[in-house]
Image (tube, rainbow, N blue to C red; front, side, top):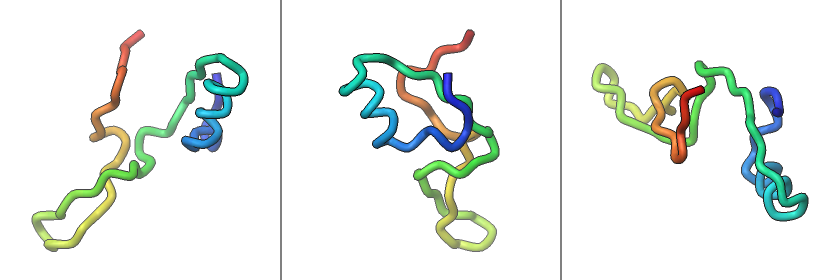
Length: 61
């Protein structure tokens, strides 16, 4: 398990491909994702918060 700040794609690929392991990353749900959307009030492009994002392979425990 890794805490916030250890969740870059490159770091997770290193863990998976080089070390042959999987990782669980704890992320702050109010953090911005790389997804964007148009804010209907301002018509500006804004980042989507992680809490509003869809995750591939999402599992609840």
